[in-house]
Length: 330
Image (cartoon, rainbow, N blue to C red):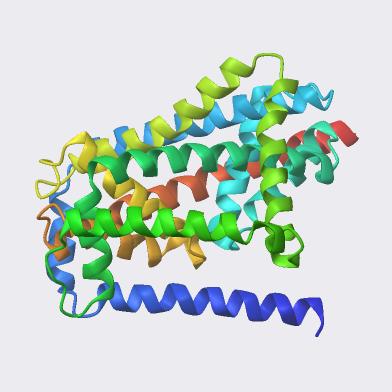
């Protein structure tokens, strides 16, 4: 099988996933009612959320400069920001193409080889994953019953009220039994190819985390990493005030919606989570008494406005990078 055919099949599968979720979310939607919800939304709150979003991308660009410095490349924050925005733009056009596009932009502005800058992206992703897992753990501890309810309502046609105590007890028993089994068969696992591969991945993950020691200011790097994700949450929180149906949600409620929405974004789909993000946010908002139609409206507004913004800013940044590259060659 040729690489082009393989890529086409992969993209086709991703497109089908997105189409399925979009159909499921918008099936039976009253479009006139949805348009009225769009018209009644307070877009000043949406604008505030988008401003925070852009600021988070600037912080990401600043953090990336610290990693380029480790590679002995003196990249200015402006060029790093251009690359970050181009990456986000490309993710809306071709799924998972953002990282390579971002690195290609840096090649034009600062002559950083793509393979080297890709290594910094991997390091960034590792730290982002750790912070997302921490947020997930916080939500898991404080909103356990709601998360169980989300799973049951999403997967069951006839959901029942979850029994938090019983499920927690079962999870604890399962973890304890699993730990005992792993301890008993540890010698056999040590020679298992799959276990060796998983161990290798975990070691690589650990090496990525330890690479923070190479940056000049590790504490600042960690603070910036936390600030990026705080901005992500605040973006969603500010946007909640744009609609009366979602304005009553607390910050912890928002954190829950954010985590579930982030999982929706991780699922491969065209348009950086089109369909999967809508489904996850709509389902999570149901847990807090937000009607399905309002949840769909909220998810569509946030995803749609952010998509338009990032496509526009990314396009401008692409032109600026091309102009800078042309000037450098002249």
